[in-house]
Image 1 (tube, rainbow, N blue to C red):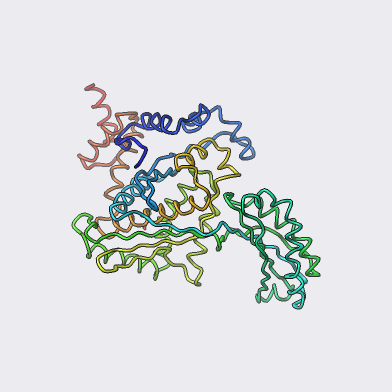
Image 2: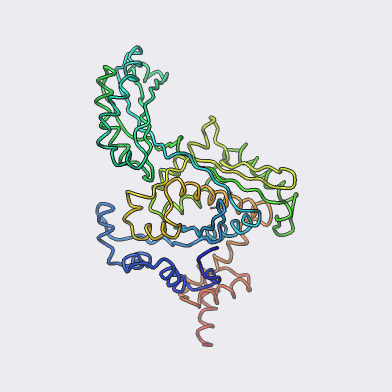
Length: 425
Ligand code: MEV
């Protein structure tokens, strides 16, 4: 069961903030951070250089996710309207069919050590240096190893690109299990520490040493099955609606221009969760899009099928999420949002992210193949106009409601309604 109060969605932001403070027993610092306290400048200052403050991005919660039999309320930080409502809407439909099932791989990250001037016959010598590299990395990876992670081995690749072949460039990939960390720091350190050992074994010199954000071996997947009888949107229902969703997904798989938008919708959810938990949104985005093009053509990350009387849906993608180390551990908002999720490890968080991405996509397809996405957007547009016109607190909903009823979505109309409202108070 969701821990949020029943009327959470309908409460004022202030009430929701108080409810969350109570549920999570937020400390003063966490509450101040969640509410955008200006005393947090020191935090900004230790996170980035030349800090001047914060760029407040709204943080919301998509409630009601049923994932692997457990209930989740998922924090999402995003500037885009409709995204959180769409995720929660899809989650409620999917819950009726039994919820999401997820899977995530071991948290394996790779470093790339590029060497040049390496003769072809040195490959075996590089491979034979594996235990020497392991020994060189042992002190660095000791605490990771104590938690069940550590160095998992190396691979040597050679490119046949003309310029690289001429310079006899090889790439040595070091595979490291980073456990609950995102891993960028430790993997980059490992790459730099291993580079001289590898250069020596290869009889070449180091060009550069850095992790790869592709995270091909750190993937997560989510799926759901939904009886066709549970599918309804506007005038469409059941098999007809499912058939349109399957076709929409096939279009995204066949047409790269559409696939970009389709996958962007998936990342609306995943990046919002990444930001809410202070994860590296750019790394996660880059990996997802590279993965979508892994067959040489950019495709949809999802698959939908009708199987008997059910719609089945799947999403798989790399998901380099961390829950310890980095900003996730010390950013007070990220820390409290991880607590809202039950303090998941990185593997669990990757699975939750995949479920959220699939929910986001399902909501988008449901709208796109029925009444379109603009209908839902107009309500939020009306809220923004009410805010822009100067409305605050309860005035926003009151002005927006009248804007929607009147059907004219412009600032003048919002200002007129607001002054009318205030005159009659
Ligand atoms: C908007 O941010 C996301 C969508 O465009 C995704 C999609 O088209 O699938 C609605």
